[in-house]
Length: 118
Image (cartoon, rainbow, N blue to C red; front, side):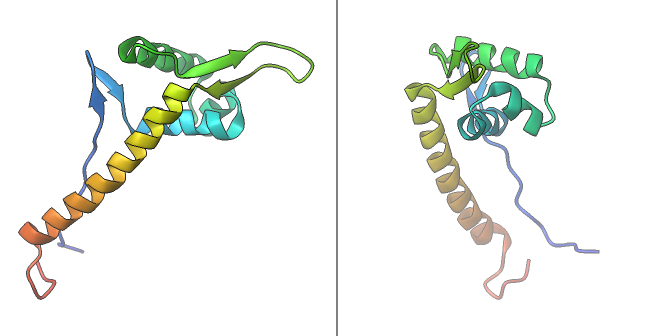
């Protein structure tokens, strides 16, 4: 059994409740990659209705649309990210990377001895 301490954390942004975190980031990234909210939800084992409600709730909290939807047509409908969503995702990703680096440094400083033991 490993008795070594490990750092675990969750970070999310709030605005009248949880407004953005890793789950919404992954969902939007799926929309960006797949061009479809339905396909992104499927990839996350999430129902389309739950994904749609989540996006609507986030858009209300944030005050701007995250997804542009295209209905029907010869190739069917689809979804793409708004510029605001792209900007939010870029900032969130950069922030999380920097936070992980900073938190790891602090963890090392407070919980790991100079010889690498705890």
